[in-house]
Length: 340
Image (cartoon, rainbow, N blue to C red; front, top):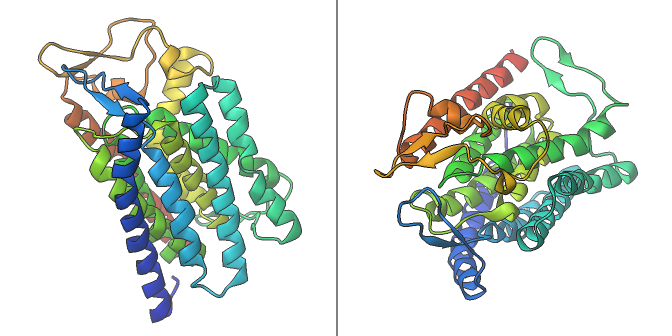
């Protein structure tokens, strides 16, 4: 278990609160700007179909870009600074892909390839200044060397995390709520596994996501857009790499991975969800949401949650939170076993 100096604990707390304040300030501004630009979307899970400003994730991206460097400069360790730089460039690149997708609508394969490319800053920095440890830790086994496979794992991991979070951002509060739970678990795991880099990133991301959740929770006042979900997904993927939290991150992301697996296996190929002809759910006259009866409809995790019958949107979202809490608990338990 890591022991931070008292001043370093204050730095971490500063990073959390400062990033919270930045995001809390930016979201209302982004909301107004998106309304003015008529970049909006319809909340299809409401009977009155309210029009909501999109691309609220811009506030998430900017908050990370501003908050993380201001926290990083407080730490004197150059290795940590370089890891945070690699993390920041990767997240910024993924966020840029999200902005393009929100404005121009990329195809599923194009978006996936671009999120793979977004991880290149990590590999480029590592080529000149070794910042990555290609030896993931496993319970009971310890470290395993993956020197040859690790350069392949890095971009694949970032792309998978980016797109799995993107695929789960389907209802009010699901993405930021599950992200808060995940980053909270990563903060605990970072403490247990002696990852100072992981502690810094997790704290900053927690501050950002807690602030953003207030605006995206039910009933949502802003939608994240792909810029939000791809940014958060890339942050989780890059955190796993620079924080040496590969195994526990996979466990914490089990609900995200399950959702993506069910979606892809039921559709048979990569496809933008907006292009799916048969939605996975349907809105009932009483405002509840039911699983689609169309056999051609995809089978995401939400249909599993609705297996027993129709639910309200907050009840469905609570189901996602419970799944994320359980997988995050397993991730922390795994971290404990690693240091046993």
